[in-house]
Amino acid sequence: VLFSMYAEFFALQKHSNHYVRRVQNYIQTMYMYPLRVEQMAQMVNLDRRYLSRVFKEKLGCSIQEYLVRVRMEQAKICLQNGSSVAQTARLCGYDDVCNFSKMFKRYAGVSPNAWRGEI
Image (cartoon, rainbow, N blue to C red; front, top):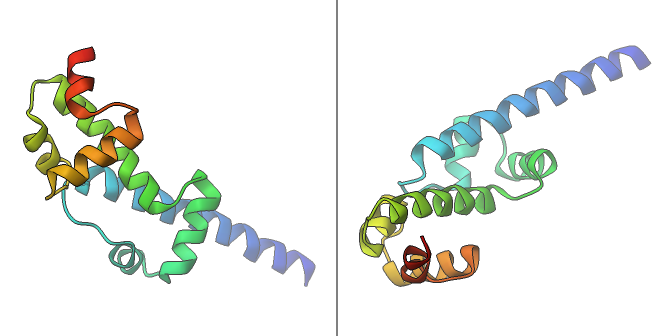
């Protein structure tokens, strides 16, 4: 009985790694579109709360925090390559340039325009 409990636990661990990787890959390829945790949970056939908990346990951040991180790293690349702040905001999934600028400053410590000037 104990052995079967361990086997089941490790099987769940293996599957949870798979779910987290699928969500990571999805975010990395779809970050420029509006994404919802509920939508990602449906994609991997898990409850939203369970997926959120497993994701945070595996990566140390929430799904939303991971999405922002991916978007902001892509934003740095876009700005470095000469895209305007408005273009970068759209390319990184933000419809509102002001919201994008606020998120970028929170993430990078400087405004997008100031960051472009530092390169």
